[in-house]
Length: 78
Image (cartoon, rainbow, N blue to C red; front, top):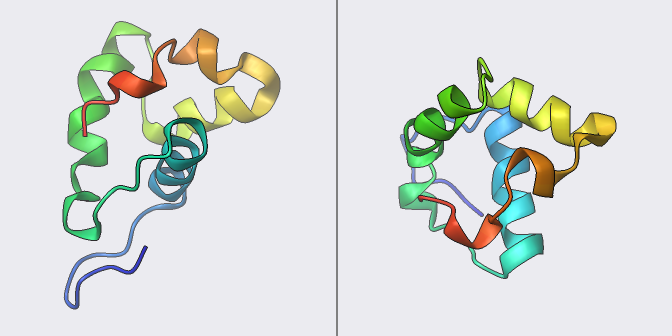
């Protein structure tokens, strides 16, 4: 994904979420909507007691499993 000129760069965690979304669902997040990742996932992070996207990505990477942390990839609110 290429970001529109002038758009802030995605954080490492947001980039991982974009990659996981595409791998798991085939959905490609339009560069113009990538900024929404953090705000769209805040309710889910709070619900699961996670402080940030970084913590979500760390849990997935540490073997927390994407399905346990986020059971339905196809329902990503972006």
